[in-house]
Length: 469
Image (cartoon, rainbow, N blue to C red):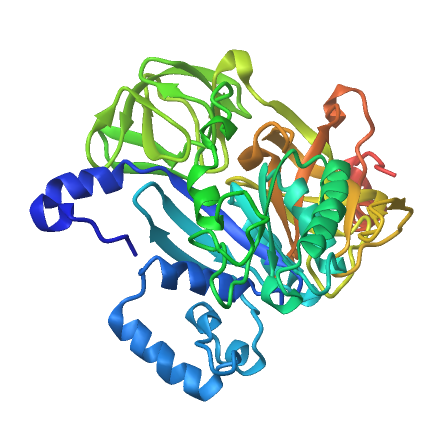
C-alpha cells in the first residue's frame, strides 16, 4: 500500500516515477510474546491511512468476533491472519506487509515471540536492515528479548529501534523508560550493536507511533515512524567486493548463453574481467541483461543475466567475482549456528549445506561452545538443541566460495538441511575460513564413508582401495 498523493490525480507518470525511485527499507518486529508486535504494525498501517476500506470493514467484523483489545479496535488482526493466531492472540508464522510513505518504501516482517518459533524469527530477520525490538514496559527485558537481540546482532542487522511499548499501562512513567533503556543499552554494548534508538510508545493507543504524543512531554525524540523514515542504510552495502552467485544458466537458443542471478554485493560493469569459481577460469562481461534493457553497470540486489566473451564451463552454484577481490575457496569453516530442529545436532552426521546457490554435503565436525542466552557466556556442549546457538566447525565435501558473514551477509550465510526429511534444521553464519584439506590438513570422513571403504577393501581387494581411517 502506498500513501495518498496529489500527484496521482494530476500527473500519474510523475507519481509513479517518484514512487519507483524511493529507497526500500526491510525491517522486522521482534521481542517476547505479547509485547505488542502485531499491534504496532497494525497501528502503523492504520494511522498512516494505508488500509483499504474493504479491509477495514473486514477488520471491524473480525474484531467483534475474535478481538483481544476490549472496546478498542484490535489492530493485530491486520497481520495475524492464521486462524490459530487469532484464537490465541499470538503470532506463529512470519507475516510480511508492504507499505510506503512520502519518503520511503517499507517491507516489514512481523516475527513471532514464542521460543518455539525462534526459527521463524531468524528466517524473517535474514534479509532485514533494521530491527524494531519490542519491550513491554511492565516486564522489561525478558529471555526472548535477549535471544532475539542476540540473533539480530549475529545476523548483522546494524540498526535497532527499541520500542518500549504499553507505556499507558505504567502511567507514562519516565523512570520506567529510563530503566529499560539503561538495561538494553548495557546489553547492546556487550553485543556490539552500535546504532540503537529508543522510543516510548503505546501501540494500542498510537502514542509516539506516527506522531509525537503529548502524554510524554519528557520524551524529546522523534516518533517511531520518523525514525524509520530517517535511518541511513545506503552505506551498509558492500560495494567493493563483487559477488554474483549463478542461479540459472539461460540457453534459449544457440546464439545466447546467459548466467542468471541476483548480484549479492559490489558493482558489476560491462567489460569487467571476472573469474568463475570454483574452476578459476576468467573472462570478460560482454552484456548485463535485464527485462527492460541492457545495462552498463549494476548495483547489489538487482536480478540480472550476465553474458561473457568466452565459452567457459559455468553452472548453477558457481560464482563470478573480480579476480583481485575473489572470495576464499575452502571446505572447512568455523560458523555460528542457530539450531531450528526438534532433533538435536549430531556431530559427524551428514547434512546438506546450502551456501547462496551452491549445495554441498558435509558435517559438523566439532561444537566449540554454545551460548547461554541469559548471560551471553559460552558453555561447553556436545550437541545443540532446539533454539540453541553455538559456534561449530564445518567440514563440507567440496570447496565452497564463501566470505565471512560480517563482511558480506549473502555469501557468508548458509542453511543446514536434513538429508532424509529435507527440512531446514539450522541457519548459519561463517565466522572464519580455515585452510582447505588440500592445503595440508587431514580430511575428516563420516562413519558411513569409513564403513563403505572397509567393505570395499574386504570384498574387492583387486580395486586396491586405500584406507581412509
